[in-house]
Image (cartoon, rainbow, N blue to C red; front, top):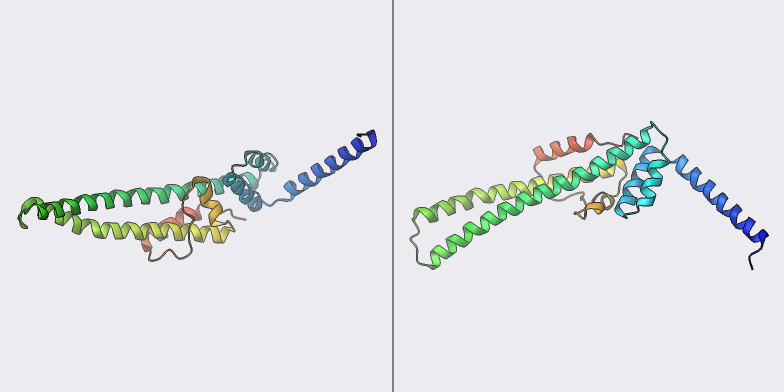
Length: 193
């Protein structure tokens, strides 16, 4: 049976919990708030995302930190997916050229025919391009991982909202030039806190 005393106690507990919740949000540093926001995005917890933004002190570094983690979180899948797309196109062209060469050979075509030689040259050109694209993709993984490590962001959290592969610490050989470029991209998005 609900009594006025039980109702009063329930309201008191609810008010205390709200005060605790407000204190927790008020005590968050900008970096903690930004990481919590991005984690909420990964869980598709829109209510928590709104709470984190709405409780941030206005005109503060809190909203800037959220903006920077948003930028990093959006840059990573664009870089990764762009490189994967390029790699897929290159592999497709390689497969087409190799299939043509095999078909040509199976049909008894001359090995010095111009059409065959053109595709052999294409294969010779594509193989190093594919290797370079793999090194570029590895550079993206490593630069994003380094950013996550320095900012205290879980790499899985960075990748989760877009369903892409999480950045890894040692993805293998990298294109050093691409690595430096990607590091500069992520450096521009430091939480700075």
